[in-house]
Amino acid sequence: MKSINQIKTYLQYFSLFFLPFFYTCSTTTIDKSKLRKDFTDEEMKIIDLSKEIINNCYYGTFITINKSGQPKARVMEPFEPDENMEIWMATNPKSRKVNEIKNNSKATLHYFDKNNMGYVSFYGNAYIVNNEKIKTAKWKKGWERFYKNQKEDYLLIRFVPDSLELISISKGYTGNKNTWKPGGVVLREEIN
Image (cartoon, rainbow, N blue to C red; front, side, top):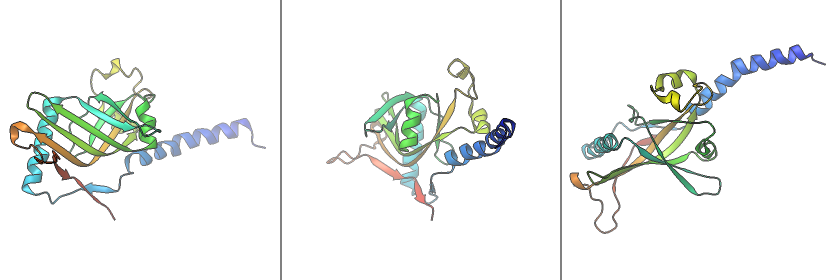
């Protein structure tokens, strides 16, 4: 029978070497798609306009799906989209959205620009990221009010949109006049 010290040593080894690897890999490399490179001029206009709407809004509504299939919405303070059109957000590890994302990664991030009568909705998948290096790089001054312990009270959400839909009355993007379907762009292609 193994001694208590041997078991403690094994658990320390496991937590030091395998758990960080598990959390880093399982939460940041799940999606099987990459950003398209072949956007048309019109699609690039829509993508640029989506970024303009984001900058005008600052806050977005992040929508996840609970276990019973009910969409749940909350206002978030997302980062601007990065070079891969991925959008990062911070959250409390005890918030309901963490388990909702773990159970169903499908999510929507919606921004409404009241002043310019426009909106953009991003549809894709969200992933929980608990990588200390990434968390430190994304940390914003002032967050210590919300996350007392940066290591334990703070996680990131990496939202990877597959597509977007957009309406901008002021820029002439009004959608289909019969169906009201907004203009859209498929952002990603599957990796084989």
